[in-house]
Length: 402
Ligand SMILES: C[S@@+](CC[C@H](N)C(=O)[O-])C[C@H]1O[C@@H](n2cnc3c(N)ncnc32)[C@H](O)[C@@H]1O
Image (tube, rainbow, N blue to C red; front, top):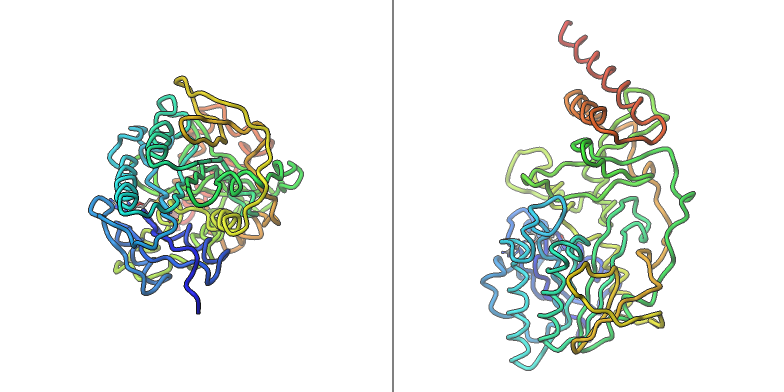
């Protein structure tokens, strides 16, 4: 068998969302030769799902990558960049770890081989601190001599019912990143494609936002500011009252991240129910998004688009841009849906009959916040939350009286 064309060194590998997508798209033509992942539960998933691949622990101690690496992948921690996080920025203790990736690439370049780079992170990094994180990435990438491109995409383009906007950035001297990221544009889905029989929202919120999504869940998250992962809830308007507000299972979340159900069902060496699975899944890259990237690396398209020269000048970065040698161009005619793959509706993923109802405590807290604020104005939602909360608390009262 001939050796694969693409060899990946996967840094901040998590549960391997990027690499799974590449495997699906490229089959035997890709191989991951190294994982770097620091968190034990993620390492356990990697060991189970990608057996026999070396896992290095801490990116800060990674001094080199295999010489034949063609692509370094780095979905680096977003905790300092995301709106749900600490917002310390690119110099934060976690997101700042990306600098070690550039150190490794610097060394590789000095040794005569510069692999391509794929980065994934939250769109807030385009805006936070006037786009400082993006400016830093571009500066490091340009110093290495790459051509680069990035684009914000919404995971729903792959057909999964999860609204998840992420920046995908590619830098390469071997292929044209524009031909990968900018060749496809399908326009947003027609609003009527989304059904009105299920809505995702964050029951842990309610004051400033709800993370509302129609026929989808809002972005699955690795954790809140305090690090506790909080699964979203689903409002099912036409369900009987005892199933009106339910929670998806972690297996549903795996599917909504493009994995097969059970991907993170491994032995974590703890008895805690589901242990860290929500956090692992929420942190991941939607595997179907990286599958699209990999397909386009294998078969680049035609990135004939409307580009215009752009200068940073201390403001937010645009949603899609490319550059090299100090020049930046924004893409005027591109959206967040490269394709419109067949859509899986939320109720096709979540079995409402079997789903866990939102707890009395969770419902009561959410209901209070919802009514204190002015959110959740979709017709029927506030009324249903109130009705459900009253119902579930009465069930609790009956049980404790019995
Ligand atoms: C956003 S997640 C990456 C998700 C991954 N792309 C996936 O699809 O699952 C960032 C990962 O970086 C890992 N990480 C954090 N600090 C690290 C370090 N010092 N060395 C290696 N990995 C680290 C975290 O444990 C987490 O799994």
